[in-house]
Length: 151
Image: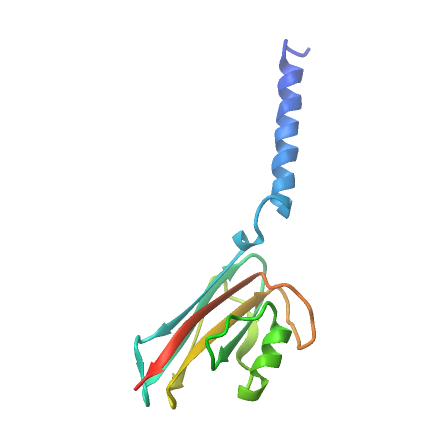
């Protein structure tokens, strides 16, 4: 036996559940909630002929992710995708990190030696699977940081 008004309440609960499941599929929720990515450079300021560290950290949903990071020897903004970034940084050696991430959350860092004065940018991209040059896959997350090497 259905209590008075019980059916109406049941229908409204179903409508709310459908609405929330639709939002959860990505129609109203930004995909950035699924993955995070941050880039840090230390120490600050970086002096000529000293060492500095680039640290990339983040998290993602799933079993594994694929991280690609570049150093640009300019202050230009990062490109939208890895293929464009590889094309731009090809003369400078391209990616300084590319690999599968199995631990979540993760942190990767690498030390560099400052050999010339300039303004540089680190561009990092996190994907759900391995990417190769020429593939057109949107990253789960991207991050960048601008830094300078001074005398």
